Length: 234
Ligand SMILES: Nc1ncnc2c1ncn2[C@@H]1O[C@H](COP(=O)(O)OP(=O)(O)OP(=O)(O)O)[C@@H](O)[C@H]1O
Image (cartoon, rainbow, N blue to C red; front, top):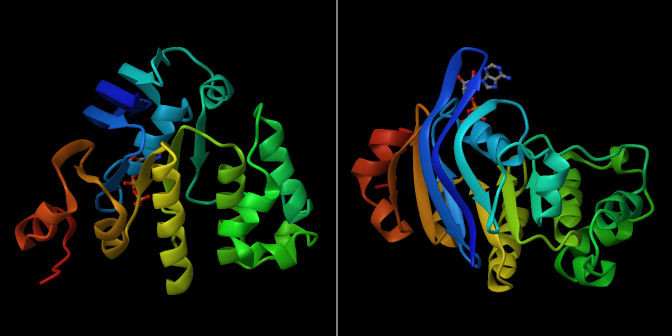
């Protein structure tokens, strides 16, 4: 089933237009990566999908339903999880409680045991206040929260920022695992290597527009990365 479709999505902060007609479609089981330079509008795109922040125009359909006028919590209840860039844990709650809060918001959460099998690093920290964990560990708690919600559309904003390479690989494996379960994952990333490894389709956003889209093997052409990202992979 189609998890997401936007048609001519436009977003505004006050009078400033940040997204200029985004057409994006994503199926269940597909990992869609969004690349782009700083300020291109990637975070604004995810926030627009969640009904957070900017004023939006155009059409968005999530899991078959138009989200026009929907509040963020209603969008979440359709089966959408959003992992913002600055993952916010509840610092005074334990890691376990942080996961329970997320699990509480859905009818049939993923069992904790299953989450710990994928994220063994957090098991020894389950009863520690989440605010005492390192930034990287807090990122993992954010991922654990998303896993617990058993979402059908997962929006991730730079989930590997600040993570050590081993954990970056692990996050990549988790994303692929969710896709194999039928989840549609939209991932904003700066880590081009990771994107090439895990994405099925890549969209490059520049100045609020999708300038290029295609599979990873086509992206590995110096022109595309040089031109839109200032990255030279060759
Ligand atoms: N709350 C806001 N109010 C006004 N302008 C904003 C707001 N948030 C973002 N912008 C502007 O919108 C544009 C897109 O920002 P956005 O954060 O979506 O880009 P991004 O591609 O996610 O960048 P980054 O990689 O730095 O996170 C930028 O010009 C930014 O200054």
